Structures are given as C-alpha cells and as structure tokens.
Image (cartoon, rainbow, N blue to C red; front, side, top):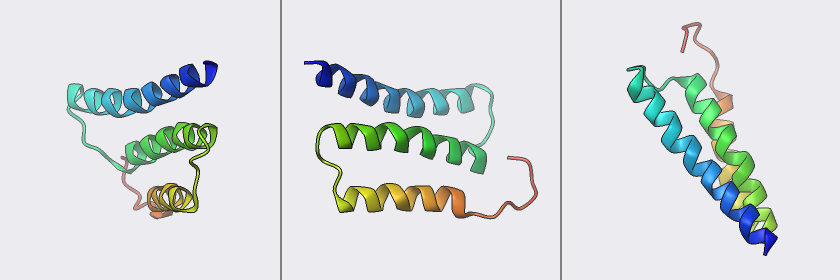
Length: 83
C-alpha cells in the first residue's frame, strides 16, 4: 500500500515540475533557455528513475532514454549568453 503512495507522489512531482515550470515561464514572459531545460530534465529524471525502479520497470531501454535526455541537456557547451 505504501508503494502506491510513493509512486503517486513521485508522479505528481513530475507533473508539478512540468506544469509549474511552464506556468512560471509564461507568467514572467521569459523564454525556455538551456538552464531551464537542464533543471527540468534533472527534476524529471530523478523521480522517474526512482518510480521505475520501485515498480521493477527500470529496463535497459528506460535507462537509455533517461541517459540520452541527461546527455542532451548537459552536453551542450555554454555559449556565454545568460539563459
């Protein structure tokens, strides 16, 4: 029973990051820069990994997708502009 609650909380955290992040960007009329993308990827990847691991669904494909997203977000070299 407690694993259901943990899974629900982790799922809501992922949803809150997406909705809250986009809402704040729309509210302050600021674009989605690389810093926001990095924050969003890391804030979604951690609970998603834990959620998949708790439910015994952390497969090689899921790890590859999460690693690819992290690599994309953190692999870009800074161009010197403020994001």
